Length: 265
Ligand SMILES: [Zn+2]
Figure 1 (cartoon, rainbow, N blue to C red):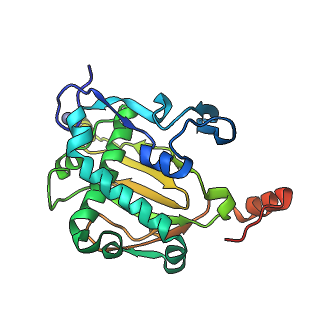
Figure 2 (cartoon, helix red, strand yellow):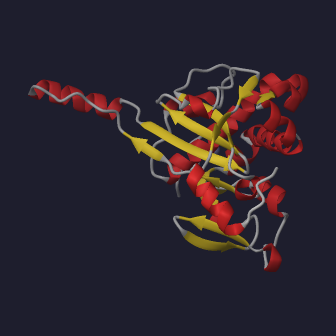
């Protein structure tokens, strides 16, 4: 049996790839049949999903029951409250383009926004394990801490495509991983030295997840794209959204022309 990546005990619990509460919020409790049918699109393949507990929306067992349910429960709760806030305040957020965590969590915002960051760390680490990459030590350690240093930075952007193309969709972007570049070795010793540096140096990862019109961007050991929002590592009461579109202006115009899509909010 695989080991839980948080505590090392046997992993007997399957974490959702797509959060169950997100599926229930958007599509109801299931079953997803008939008019309610739901498709998972994975590497271009369309997979019908029967309900929010389908095996297709879960990772393999990579956590123990205690870590998945008890230890990380406040992190999950912070995320659920964050999502329900952004759904309830959509027009306000789209207009202001920032969030004050005091508005989301009240006076407990300091603890809750840190738990939200830890939720994103959990989600990111589960994805790394799923792709057979090791979990960086700083990420595992920070789950237990009130203050921490980390190589992971996050920012948030608003998808400015027409609402009809972005709403009621939840999903994940590609995970990009690359080793750090090394200078060319000039001797046998420097070659060995570079090799040791390469295997001990943390790699670079980039990833994203989206919930309807909001995308969360993950930057591990690399510089975040500033156009995608202010950088956040649970160190600020405010997040400022960046902007992105999936379609280019030409693609968008073509699609609207072809399908007579209503692009108003
Ligand atoms: Zn565990």
